[in-house]
Image (cartoon, rainbow, N blue to C red; front, side, top):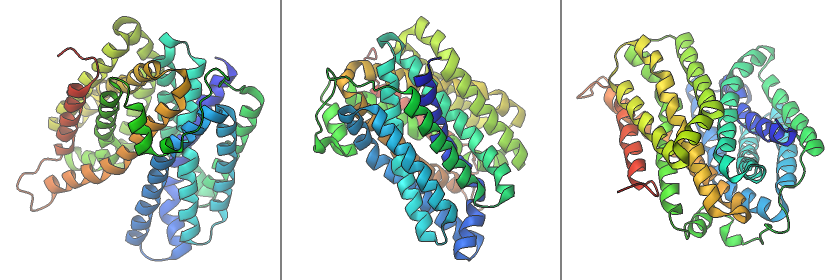
Length: 396
């Protein structure tokens, strides 16, 4: 694998790890800097997470657009340098407001997902873009799994240790990128800045002018909202339906992450060669629907674990659709389309946890008219069905 691609994948891994790396210590750290109860710490933890996601939503199109104009290399390297400094500041933060500021800045730097995806598109041949996006999705999944595990281990050294580790990782990767990453934006595809497109709403309106793009973005958003049911309610669902302990829930999430990585880094190559990008996207939606429907009604914990690889097959959808949209938008607007996709994913991470947890609570409360822990998965089934309906190019 070429070193520039290794750097891009490491950037995504570190982005994802940076989110999960600090999760295990956040309750203790928040109480350490502001006092109060665990319940109050949970409220502030939610505010910090929401602030991170909102900034990622707002700034993804901007960083994508800047990378179309000034190049992927400066956007990625500057963002990684700021990320390293931000984690160092959070490592010594003595107030909740400084932690909040750090999370807001972190949300902006994590919006480099758009520039990294655009760089991957630049380095990939037209018929292999979806495979490249599959590697990016797999890298994110690996980082999401490794982050909490490493954070838990480092947390034994104190609440600040994971932040220092994240700072070192970001700085080291910036150094690697400085050495191995050459600029992928040439004068032929360099695009002037249009400040009307530097926000998610303006960028969405601009790219939606092309036929099928708006439908593709709508399908992508619906899928992302449905997929977020796993991190949003899986732990609660496992406890309520199967009486799983913390260890079993962790194993199940790890199995899901590994299965997703296998699909997105390896199996997707076979699927696209056999089915094409659109066929692979529809394949992913189909298996997502099957998984949601079965998980909603299954009552055996072992069977739920067996279904995990089936659920992971749905992960073929996102990189396949990204490949379709990337080829259609053209080389000069890769940063823009990847920024819009990143914003859509960020918005889904804001909306879905609120929506899915409310549905779960409504069907598991002591006074619930119907006790049905699987209700959020039925909602996800409805969402992927809608995504299938709006998919561009689908035979009517």
